[in-house]
Amino acid sequence: QVQLVESGGGLVQAGGSLRLSCAASGRTFSIRNMGWFRQAPEKEREFVAVINWIGGTTSYADSVKGRFTILRDNAKNTVYLQMNSLTPEDTAVYYCAARTSGFALGRSTGNFDSWGQGTQVTVSS
Image (cartoon, rainbow, N blue to C red; front, top):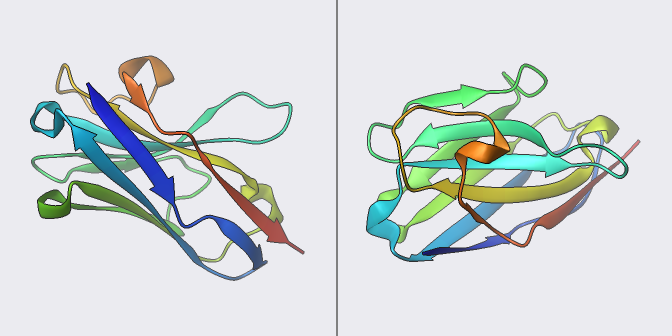
């Protein structure tokens, strides 16, 4: 099993930036992909970004493409989400997730089997 701990959330003004971190522990050798999802109040959890743990291939939701960047540091077993040009619509709890089986760069919550506890990101207008 893989354990995930997110950090880096907070309050930022519109147009600002934040960098989220997610540290993995446990059976990290089994990680195939790492992803970020977010959930706003009264909304479904939605895909944000995913990265292949070995090759570094990435995929982004259209709503964040060009503003957010997913990065990995394999030596530290850590994945990051660099968020720029934030808007109030980005306000949500952000969750880190790990996939330990299969190799497709899936974007569905069902593609991931380990989840962090979430970190709150609030963007003020």
